[in-house]
Length: 272
Image (tube, rainbow, N blue to C red):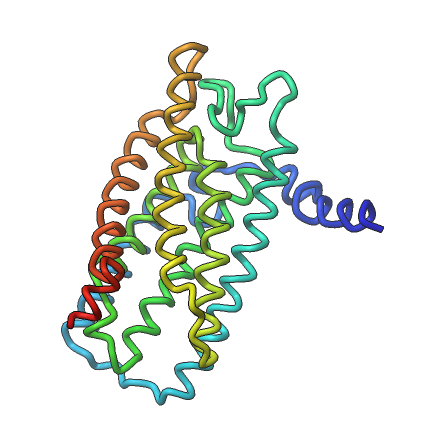
């Protein structure tokens, strides 16, 4: 029974022709053009800043807002779970037996953006645009000024660019980021879902801890990747990896600052 279930899951997440024969084609695949990327990010930033500065959107009644938030969070929680499972199975499937380090160091010049791992990277990239709804829900709430932080807006805008580079540059190490970030988002959106339903899970701090931990794990993985890069034929998309590392570092600083403000001595006793 377990084998039948695994085979079914593997087929729908890895072996299905749409997934197994996937190929990223710049300018042809959905959302693959620079124009689409820049339009999405600029529109998000412009709309967010304008609607925050000029709050013309009415605040939704709490019941309607909770319902909308619950629906949004359950979709992203389930999608994150599917992406985490799909990316894990795909990376294991696509790793050549003679190159077990494939997920950490995609071979330079020998890795076209095709196959199931890149399919899930594409889904992940498009899901980051869906996450813009996070910001819309804040703008529709009565606490928009308190909840809409620089970290929130910066993270949502910049991560779309980072995910685009994973695909466009066949960026090395992206399978690790894809799997860990999807897994963390399962925890995060599960927390938001329960909160929207009126519960207050005791693991709010654990969400931020998981986010910080994934960044630190990324640095460890990068160290191993650099070893493979300089002792072998090289890894692909190193320029994109460099930019992603700068972005990750900026996020780590912001998340650590958020952690210290909110949980350092328990928010300094909730600001006294």
